[in-house]
Amino acid sequence: MTTTRSQLLPQALRFLGHRKRVLLKLGGWSLLESAHTFLGGYGVAMALDRGFLAGRTGTGLAWLAVAALAVVIGGLATGGVFRGLADLVEPLRDGLVRRVVRRSLDQALAEPAQAADSSVVSRLTNQTEIARDSFAGLVLVARSFVFTAVGALVGLAALAPALLVVVVPPLLTGLLLFLATLAPMAARQRDFLRADEALSAQFGSMAQGLRDVVACGAGAPMAAQTHALIEQEARAARSLARWAGARSLSLGVAGHLPVVLLLVAAPWLLRHGVTAGALLGALTFLTQALLPALHNLMNALGAAGTRLLVVLGRLSPGPDPGPAAPEPGGTPEQPGHAPRRPGVPRVELRGVTFAYGPGAQPVLRGLDLTIEPGEHLTVVGPSGIGKSTLTCLLAGLLEPDKGEVRLHDRPAHAQAGRGADLSRLRVLIPQQAYVFTGSLYQNLLYLCPDGASRSAVDAASEAVGLGPLVHRLGGIDAHVDPATLSQGERQLIALGRSYLSPAPLVILDEATCHLDPAAEARAERAFAQRPGTLIVVAHRISSALRADRILVLDGLNAACGGHQELLDHSPLYRDLVGRWHAERN
Image (cartoon, rainbow, N blue to C red; front, side, top):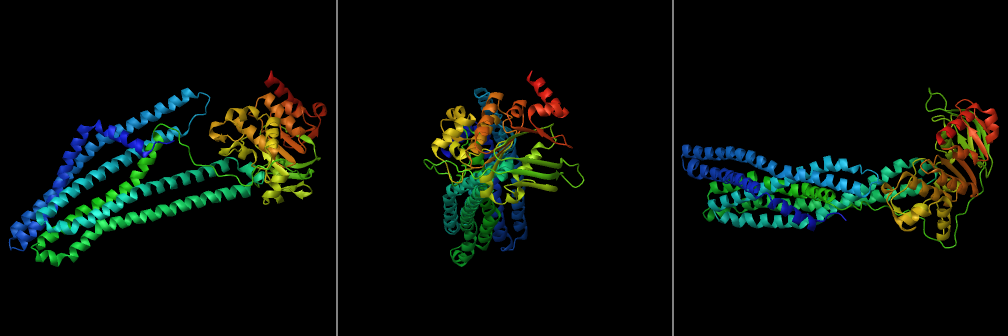
């Protein structure tokens, strides 16, 4: 749980309590600012009443000089305020940096096997700077408003107490209205930030797993989940805008209504002894001092205050639960139900040529290949030779420049826009497996439009070797955070999901490269025994030895056959097998 406002308040009071000397210095300079406010309005009033209206031009100019001197005093006070402010905010930034470093080191020592937290850099740089700047802005405007208000109200009382009767009620009403909007405004701001983070996390996870999302026909449910998150953020933004409107109303009541009432009540005030100079001085206090200070205060508390609260909550000890993951649709438990697999497709490549660009050398050239229903084919070749390109062509993610790739006697790429057919026909697992935040059960049923029974899920988990991970996480309903899983654990979840899917064609593009040889062998044997066709891009020679046939890609000519046959007739295959043996030894 993140640090709450009730926890932050005592911390803030302790921080300020240790810096009483700095606060006294700020208070002293701020008193000069209040004197500047007082002399500005009072000097204008006296210049009019005792000078120009009384026929004493020299006296009027002298009082205007006093008002001008107040501006100089205000400038000196502002410089002193900023020097004192630096003594207050820099220790805050240093303390936050120490806290982030200490927290990160403690986490690294407690969980040495855990992946490095890349967000530390953001917390050390961007977020601590946001906290420092926001805190400085809040201190600056809050202090300015308090002392400006004191100077202005004392000035109004000195000119004519009746002015307070007109000015103070709407000022207090607007301030109370504004204070009433702070808590809801902060809550709406937090909702908006969480919705924005959830949407960003969704886009980030989809970008990482885009290839298998498209290949497995999961585009429609992912689009629905993303649309729901977009709508959630839009609702939060609209709610935030409504409360921002309420804040603007409070600014109008506190800042502008006193001016209007002062003008409306001018005849009454004049009848009760208020002079024209006092009225002008009161307008000067309101328009040149109170209204700007109030406007800055409301903007700072409404924006910088909320931002500071959120950032301090993230920098304080305690993990952030993060945005909630969307629930994948169509995955309820259905007792006694197992995925239904359609007929196993015949896969044909007819004269397939593909290049990444008009002027590029073809990655595949005139490739002819037929993969019979139920066959286990392994693809081998040097890095960059076109193995992953071939899997993308089989999955319909790429369209050949020449020739055809056909599944069930239909073009493979023609199915790319029909998500439901795709997820039931083929599934592609790449090297970087896609796992989303949610329960392990939801992840495993991700490619099962009709659901599956718990017994089927347990059987799939046992088949691919997912059992130890299920036990470590706390069961099939345990929460999954992809950031806390290793690459191999993410691959095991993707393997279990694909094993459980109804797709009769499974394409493993080095999908076991992060597993140890024993785990890899277990997973591949499970898929080989699973009804359907299996195509494996090999990561080890053992994968080739387990296949019915082996396809060797060399960029110009492809060779296909059994292990011994290729050893006899393919120099490239002999070389690859020799390298694999050398690496193993």
